[in-house]
Length: 201
Image 1 (cartoon, rainbow, N blue to C red):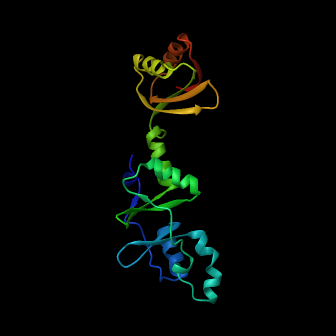
Image 2: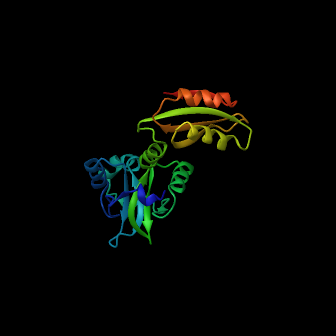
Image 3: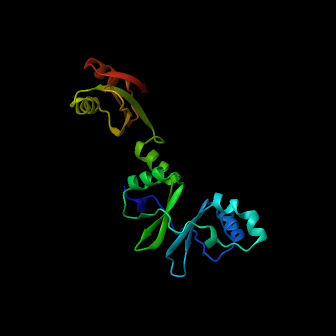
């Protein structure tokens, strides 16, 4: 999945000449926590977040401070054509809440932790009507294919698969499937020697 499919388009932006008070009011008005800073040609020149602004708010009442004085002038960015996984890695690595999305140097969107989390929830099918089987696969190379086949043979439609444990040979995979009676699936898997750690009906 590309960043373009999950980013917030037409983001609220601000100029580097704007005051700290203006930036704080803009964030409050639109219920946002990040502001890209752009020049007259809509090119990104910086990035500012709520904590930075609040940290200099008192000082800005004593002396004239602008967004340009406190912004991050070389922010971490991502392209709209990058994979969403790349955005997630950057956000995790740099411990940031979001970042600007660029195309040819121009600001086209913002991607945040919330956007990525919502994408993950959609992919996993967590909010939809579904069932779950957590299966211990062991160290066989063919185990994943065999478990998937058993589920399909019992009319189970797999929505997504996640790994719950990678630290030992006893790998546990969580299979999320279309809502169904999971008891026959559990029995079929255990008859083939697979341990169903937990399941939801």
